[in-house]
Length: 384
Image (cartoon, rainbow, N blue to C red):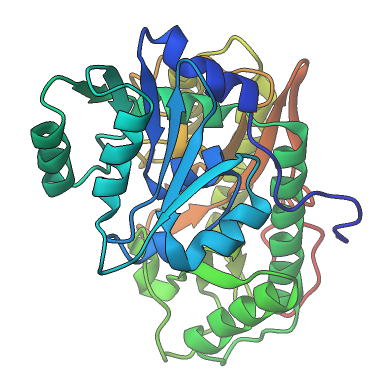
């Protein structure tokens, strides 16, 4: 799928972000975990995922314009790409990022303010420095509130996620059509990874590739063992495309599938289609989980997962998760991976996963299409 006129660095919901402090009765909200910073600033800084000490913040005051604080080596990239005018940087190893944050809070006149920040990521040492330097300020957790904003996607964000899903799906189809029994698990898994890169990904996020008896493991790794005829091949893969990613799973046969293997697989594909068919605005995430569990047990299959899907975006598992106890209601503009999993009488697991958009009337598939009902065999072209 060509990128065409797709904006690969879509702008966030800026009006909602700027209104967040007032809606929470706060004087400011600070986005600082890698996903919230990326979303709020509109800039993907690669090293933030790997170098925890290189902290960055977006400060949203209730009154006034937002401020970006980041490491100086990333300053040119951020200044060129962000929608925020006020960008402040620190010199790494000379200045501490939290000291620039403290100075910014004082500049904004918020040293006695009520301030939200990402407690799910904030290091204890940083928090201690903040509270000692600003003893009259109060800090509270706004991780969930920022995540809730990210859970409803803009049209540009959905376009990027759809592009990534289709590219990854096509890469998998190409790789599996050119694979054969007798090749090692690692050779086939590497072929998938190579195709994902060739189809536009920057990196491979993960490859889970359990085959044969290892198919009893939820997240198995490819080995150098040759794939034997009659085995189930299951994989869950994802590529990284800048700030965004893909997440996709399929189950194949290495050849000569048994009647049970074909039956279990077909039932799983039917379950996924029925689950996607009942998803629409107003349905609680926990209802989707309960529906999937009911349909799985009705077909006499084991129900194995603590969740059967998750919202997807800058973060791999965003809210809501399709799990018990998740009361968040599906909304138009949410994008979720739907991924039921079951096993056969030997304990070998089967898994399919596709990305869907919640629309006003139900759902729209963002991959190239759901898995074919007939168990696909490696070395043969399939449609899904």
